[in-house]
Image (spheres, each protein chain N blue to C red):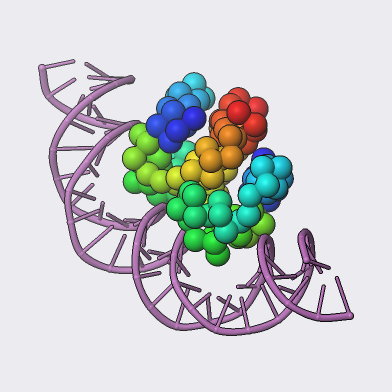
Length: 66
Length: 66
DNA sequence: TTTAATTATGCAATAAAATGCACATTTTAT
DNA sequence: ATAAAATGTGCATTTTATTGCATAATTAAA
């Protein structure tokens, strides 16, 4: 899963929960600018940023043997 | 999975493959300093850094519904 | 054991991510 | 069709991750 795919999953999940980028960015403590870029795969986010987002959306990051 | 757990998985997998931190850091293009911190959960790595490491170790990062 | 290799840490310098703002574009509601 | 809300982008600034080096501590080999 690359950063574009991860961004898509975040976006799909956020829309499913009917929440705006602005609101979610505020909830997780990221700037709207940065959040938009992460969803569109245009940022290289830190693990902390991803964790905050996924946790807020009820998603989980895992690393497993391929 | 938090950054400490992710670091542990990386370390266990690296040892399983019998490669040193120094060698793997060079392979993936990270400094030894940074790589050590990532394994020990003391860094806040970028997604790119994690992808390079997991790819080299035959691991996969996934984001899924919890 | 003692030596060599590997792993771990402090710190200053550098590179890169994140922010804030202004504004453009797209989508949704009226 | 129009207004309002939501989403997307350029750019300068700020914040933070990463690097490099020196050195300590731990682990493995002779």
